[in-house]
Amino acid sequence: MKKFLTRPARRRAGRSAFAALAATALLAGALPASAATLPTDSLPEGSEEIGLESFAAESADAPGYPTTDDPRVGLEPGAGDTAGEAISNLEKLASLPMAPGASTNSDLAFTGDYVVSGNYNGFNVYDVSDPSDPQLTTSVICPGSQNDVSVYGDLLFLSVESTAGKIDCTSGGVTSENRFRGVRIFDISDIENPVLLPGVQTCKGSHTHTVVEDPNDPDNVYIYVSGTAGVRSTAELDICSTGSTLVDPNTSHFSITVIKVPLDAPETAAIVNRNARIFSTCGDNSCEDQHAEGSLNGLPGSGRQPTYPEDSPRAPGGQSVSQTYQCHDITAYPEIGLAAGACQGRGLLLDITDPANPSRIDAVEDYNFAYWHSATFNNDGTTVVFTDEWGGGSGARCRATDPLTWGANAIFDVVQTEDGPKMEFASYFKLPMVQTNQENCVAHNGSLIPVPGRDIMVQAWYQGGTTVFDFTDSKNPVEIAYFDRGPNHPTQLQTGGFWSTYWHNGYLYGNEIARGFDVFDLTPSEFLSAAEIAAAKQVTFDEYNVQGQQELTWPATFTTVRGWQASAKHQGAIGADLDAQVTKFVDRAEQAAGANNAKQRNNDVAQLRAVSNQLGDSDVEQGLKAALHELADTLSK
Image (cartoon, rainbow, N blue to C red; front, side, top):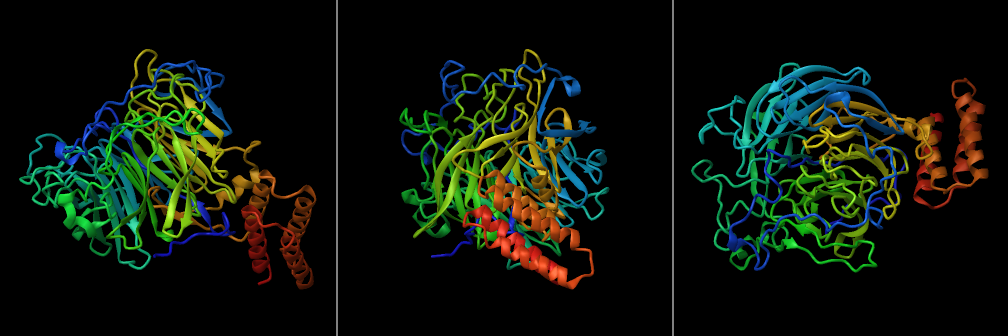
């Protein structure tokens, strides 16, 4: 049995979480979540797709439904910056309108001082060296939704699923000879002048993609391609097959595609695993020969799901779900050897220790989920948050009659068993307040915020705005900050809102579908202290893709220690007397740190170690203890 990395403490000092999730949506104008269907004989009997009905009307104040008592309720509608706004425990630093030529802002990626913003018509680059004054530096027109974007070194990748995309990025006159559906590659060594390189064509295009590093292969990166549209004809791309799984082992259904990108020659990027069979009965390609017995369709079932018992914390259930035969998004965490796949009808846990050949090690269902959309691990790999894009991103799903278990996040704990890691349900989290029939609103893209000792996530909810929630206690998530605008239109549902909101290098960046680009900063509150925010702001990445999760490291500083201490105090893990002692010795050591007094320094180091030994065994106390020891080691040098 393979061994996967697990961490006994929630966060060891200098080792923690910042990642994400993340993933992208199906919007009006793109293929709806339920539109891509399989050949009839590929589906199990009785599993025909049915529409996603709204839950029956219930009293707005019934248990399990959102509240109407919230500043976000009843905001004035308006296009652009004319709508009413509500904000809590955040500061809006900047708002820029839609960039010229952009259409439907989508996902974000980060490189150096730049944020790359995808849109259905190409991508834009913002210089955020001053987050309060972002500057648009580059605009590239290259139609092909969704144009989800990621970066790696001098390379930029774009997902293209639309049948209207062309190889040369121009518009109109699309033919089978010049169509592009797959992953585009740009050279961004000069970020103000990106250069289009040969991309990689795939059978179902690329709705989203994930850049995966192999810790043992520094010369290449891998791209997991998630396509949710129809399969191309063999006449257009000869590697493709639309055949039924019952007669065709080469079918492009029931698989993801893996691309290998040589970093020294990205123009030679190519598919290395055309059909990675993570949906098969065995979870990989090893049972492909049993296709005639249905081995490729190892996770069958779609349509109306069962209900949960009325007294269950997961009630009501009964949602209509999509068939599990392709993924919407995959979040890879190479440092722990795992990925989480949000794959339409189920959430998958994948072994990616061999990046070219991922394999399924667990799959979970949820009777409240309609469309498993994206995933985010906590840093320890002990928890994963899945999102449900009920309604495909273009529907109003935060109404007074919509249960808080539908169109929500489902939080699962990753537990170690004799058979390897398995996922166990912990809780749901959904925006706790009502939105109107004129606002598309459902769980969407977010990432972790690197607060030591805590699992905190920022997340976009389309026209539900942006929220920040704490899921350190995976069974009791709590909202701690938010920003929201009123509807785009007073009487019509016009698709808009935040597609993605991510933390990067100290700030929150939001890509607003119809309004533009926003920047936020966290502010201290009863939920999050100034010390914790300061500790989080120490974390910086040269580049960051939310779907390629990276482990976070904090420096051995007084700021880091105080962040851990504040988290321990917030969680009630440290008493007042011990808290006061930690404060006294940390303050004393900081005051003397610049003095050239070896005797005093040695005394301060000894006191830091001594007070750390009074801490208990809880995760956050052990994290604080390790942080104190790392600081002591640094001071003693």
